[in-house]
Image 1 (cartoon, rainbow, N blue to C red):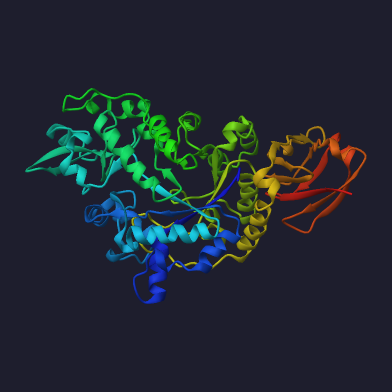
Image 2: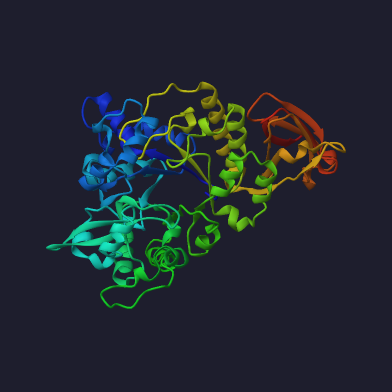
Length: 499
């Protein structure tokens, strides 16, 4: 599939809810066949169970005791209790499936069950850091960035003291260059050859247990960013020659030599998406599109979508994920949420949905908590997504060719056309046009639908999201264009049929 759909599960929260309904702890084995069948029936090709790897007591203790973290929990879960704090799934102690989830055998069975329904399994890979109680901290301190007592005294937010052998060492917390360190993570040193080889080995072992990986904050290990963050502090202390070549291009090539179809997804920001696509990633997060939608900038969205097809085809499109606010909360009123979804998911790339998004959940679930606030399903949002997912199952929308259709002003002096975003999908004689007035006022425009096969024919436009149905002259669509008059955040997805 050229433009597949990915479904992310909050594994710990879902298993916690399932366990409470069963009256016992639940594992991956307890995800029902009906649950998997529903995901497949909705048109998804990939499932990402977030956070399946083993975490440890060190990460949980930090999550339970850090005042700044504790202060944040009440926002996400007003009635939270200490037993709800389970630690970040990105503080990985080992790339073995969490014992609470049934271990490696349960993941293998889950993967087999997904495959029987035509679904592939995506798992996490966290390249930048490991948990404080990862075995490498004690056994391979050379894999980490070492500091001094002065560093610890001056920047306690970025450094910690860790047990190493019979003594202790000051090691850096994992971080990016713009924020303080994460106290439940220890920074890996990508200038050390031994660490690089060890991480390729970990990646290889992960690749045997799933069909792809989503690489957390993948840009942090790029030489430019790593050097900016750590400078000479990353020079290996054991005398080994420092490594400054890109990591990803080598690591991805080595994995794909053994598994050519293995998929690499990069969480990436700071305009480094193209760089990581060139390094071998199949898809990269498109945060720029998301940010422009949040800002309500229809013209800026169109300009972003003018990028080359190669970039577009390898972009991951989303309206929410575990790091962002829920779409139903971020995009208000609900009409805006629906317009943003039409724009986001009807352009090329990997379409990414987070569990709960399709039901209109508004409360974000903290990554440090194993429980989330209960919510009532939003029937209006659910009905909308049922229709949108049906559109996304159409062959022209996941296998066809896409091009943007620029809007034109409906009459002189009417600038409302600037808010419109539209595109045409084609596959043989199957065609779909999506259009959204991504603005907070009524708007009008013309959109030229230039299709040679329409010349001299009548064309029926049927809205797949609503009840509208129009018949237009094909030559007029290709010359004058399709006239659109939509309310604020109005949207259509038209099927075009020649009659």
